[in-house]
Length: 203
Image (cartoon, rainbow, N blue to C red; front, side):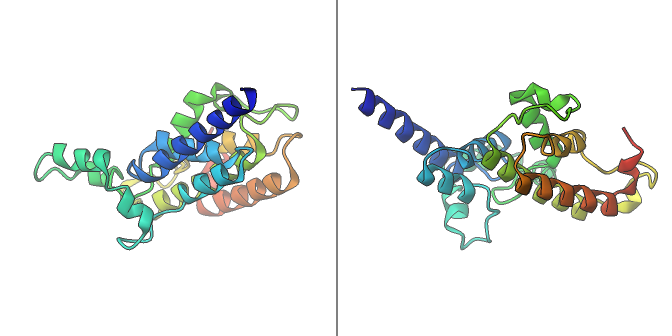
């Protein structure tokens, strides 16, 4: 009975990851978070579904992009006010990345320690594989947001870095983090400084 129960739990985790991958629009932060968690699962099939759920759809031909045009994605389109492009601009499209700040805020809501500075002895809030997946995904979101931003609409002295990004990177470099995660975070910090020098002095 114990074995059956353990198998049932694993099956439920797999189904949850599949729903997050297939059903919700790609910009849905809670669904992407579930995929991040799945990337750290003990079962390989769950991890594979989680990784697939974090890959940006490759146009209309992408099988998961088609699957995401399911019930909830269709409902969002049905509820949209004609002529209102606010949702599109905010990244609510089926195939768009969520805003980095939105995803980071949701991540911090599930793991409040991410809202605080990390010390060297701090613990990782997620398993290393899940943290690595979250880092890769957030880097995509940050790069997409920077690409879409209009320099004419921003203060050149103000930081473009999403709130919480630097704290997340610091958390990836705690003593208990594996070397590959620390290296990836160090690379992300260099990218961040090159792209947004103001982040060095801004908060």
